Length: 400
Image (cartoon, rainbow, N blue to C red; front, top):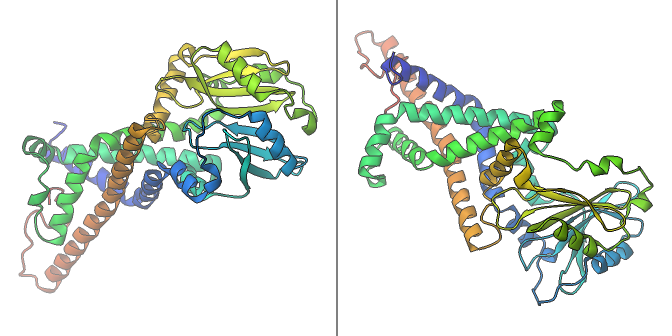
């Protein structure tokens, strides 16, 4: 039986319809939140003026900012420092007190001043977590999102198979939006197919990478697979557990950054974490590389010496693949530049197109269901009335 035979296409249509109906609402939430979350950093900057600074040239000491923040938050210790890529952004220093309460502090990289602090949830993170795991559902929420990624992939592929002839015509004549047919059902069908063709490559990319990143959470039950995907520092396992006060790094963070950059040529740090015993784990990536932000790392001990390095180019093929997948899914490979903004804008538009497909797909099902119901009612009340082939219940009308 041919892959594009009538019987096969009927089967593909059933898969396309039911995968869309069962998961349409969830895919709509995932696609909408993901589209907007592409600009989560820009949204957070807009809502948090303390994150925006004016570049003045010479950089201040991170230690100076951290000392000022310790005075504002006595008894708190740093757990993470985010080093922004863009020049007009503040350092984001996450502090935790003895009760486990977390406060974010913002430091001006040029003046050394603390520009503000905040606690609690942020709108930008709600968007991101809604996309990642439906916000409230933690580990399994992300796995479920991965499953929906598989469903989205099936829906996209079956859509290609159903509308192959239509797609061939579109590619040969161009996207003819001016030739949308009249009538609600016909116009919705034409728009659904045309937008689907326009966003086809993007949908395949997002569905595959989203499925991979969501189901990757299951590697929690396979530590070897998890380590292969995301190699972790081994040196920190040897760090003795000490008191919270002793865990706070007292050596120069600036010196630790210099040690990390010297230990791994081309290394561009973006986050620093403090697992204990005065040890700093500095994550980043190689300058100019296409990889996720935390692809490489350097571990610096309490004496300010680099005791472990991981170069992203030296990882396994699986880890290099993972480093490649993440920026493709989130559209972060353009960096903090005009090119990055263009990439993000394209991801936003195509993400909205994917959400549009969920809406129009449901509309098509509802319009066809209503039409078939009316015809069935007429046929039941007037036995002499004929139902046209291709419109009868159970017929395939995927091209309408």
